[in-house]
Length: 208
Image (cartoon, rainbow, N blue to C red; front, side, top):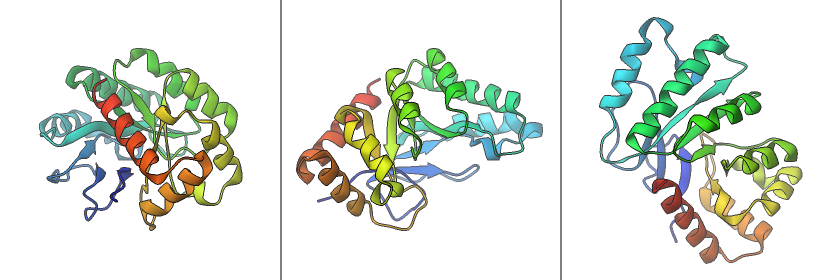
């Protein structure tokens, strides 16, 4: 059985969404394209936006990863402006947004009202209250390797609606199948049913 990897950085994985780094050439399988807060070039942001729009070929599944990060040196206002531009591109091209967020979840939530397409928080690994607030604002959550060992995160995943989450490896070195096995155990459903649900969720966000 093949398992879909919602967000990854590995060109050898075709069954998933490859995160395209700035100025890379897109692969011939599903990818996302965006400007990460850490990659914002203040002096060349117009060129970065043009690159992004020009590289949205047939296999482009989503915009991202993009978002807000309190730990990167780029000024917060500039991050917010670039994030908003990418949300507007998402609205225009009708593609979901894969969100990178570090310590700025409530600011990200405030941007949700400007988005016409689904927004997915990738690599979710925070407290229950943040998860509940994100879900209440109609975000999807994508979980990664931390689910294998983080008991509080397992508990959050257990009560996350089946139609509101995805699974990913991000840039961690492990097999996505391991995560699917753990989550099928946590959710008390078969591997087949979990796999089918994730694919159904993909169809839902792809179609807005």
